[in-house]
Each structure stands twice: as structure tokens, then as C-alpha cells.
Amino acid sequence: MNADDIVGSIDVQALLDRLECCCDPQEYYKLNHFSTAQINELKTIIADSLIAKLASMGLRIEENN
Image (cartoon, rainbow, N blue to C red):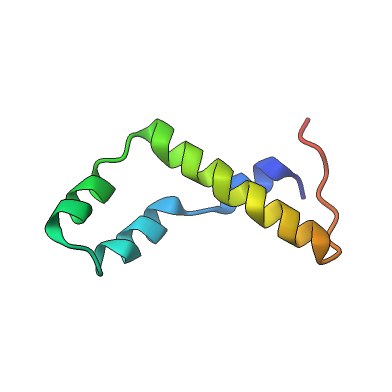
């Protein structure tokens, strides 16, 4: 697998949907109005952390082409 595979597998919208359940109305509104760029930034941040952890657990992550 490579970093793009990992980024593509992260469903940030599902994560945000679950967070909405425990938010007040203002936070709920903010979560529902993230831009595509903000969603992609979250995916990248989550993926970077996940890649590092997977690598530390012995998985080989290939460089993106």
C-alpha cells in the first residue's frame, strides 16, 4: 500500500457525522460547513499520523508515484 491508498481510505465525512452527535448547535453547523480543502487537509493530517503508526507496527508503506 502507499500513502495515497491510506488517504483514500479515510472517511472524514463519517467521522464528522459521528462528532455531530455530541456537539452543540454552533459546532454542528461548523462541522457541516467544512470546505473540500478543509476535508482534504484533515485526511492528510490523519493519514500522516496513521502512516507513521502503521510503519512502526511493521507495515511497509510505499512512496507515492
